[in-house]
Length: 372
Image 1 (cartoon, rainbow, N blue to C red):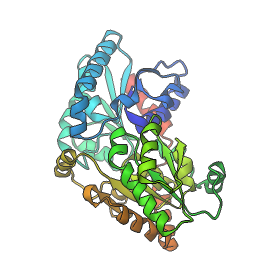
Image 2 (image 1 turned 135 degrees about the vertical axis):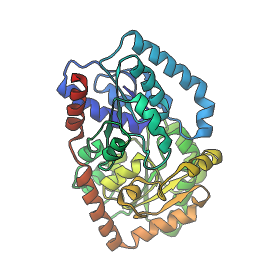
Image 3 (image 1 turned 90 degrees about the vertical axis):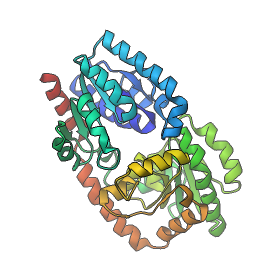
């Protein structure tokens, strides 16, 4: 298996739990993080080696990524596994899967590349690289089938993990937050480049919100290994705000908060499953942003908006990401409890749609693939 960054490690860990239950003697190895290791995964390289986003950023790390991929391929070809599962990270995994499939190794891709959102030309590479795609959104298998790619909808593992009833009070107690506190969760992303580009503005937005309403509480769950990057930013961009920096615990922060300022990515879906109003922000290197803008097919970037098919929550990108705009949008939620209730009901319906016992459905599909 290969999973990149914190979100990939989380999803792969959930999948591995189901695989180990189906096959208790399962041996798993490759690239992964602590969630996978907890299920007995042998991490030859840590998942954060692949935590790179954007064209400009990838160029700087490309030689190292290429070396890792070549060494991994050689190792797998010398001792072929029964199957290879690439978890997201399509830029890394598809080329690797193509090489493995050509040598007769069954290749499965978990979390199909979003050809419906951008880079639709990838479908040709997917055809050559993948025996089967495990899809996390219900509309995806039909799109893949139209292109001749076998795919199965397995639901989203986060929808199984996150409870339908939000544990708000328990999470607040765990984080030492009062029942009547107004809490803002800051989630600037799980990649180093996201901390560089997004965290400063989110912290300045928190400072602006604190200036307007001094009684606000702020929590910032930091992904593993990113605390040393975030602490200096707190001193510069949010001095006196009292942002509580957490080691992980993003689910508790989302369950406890009244609104979240959040980087676009898997975390926005987690926020939706916790039925939280949110303000989505994203900034990256200007060159990467220009390239991605030209390849995008959707008017939205946030997963909740894509899945609901409209701007259900506000999005701010690149130059539009300013402290005042983020603060204004957050206060719009805090000052409109009826809108928050309507949004929560829509997110609850979405939660039921995505809740499919993913570990069971995925292992059922994998067993069929292995039996061919």
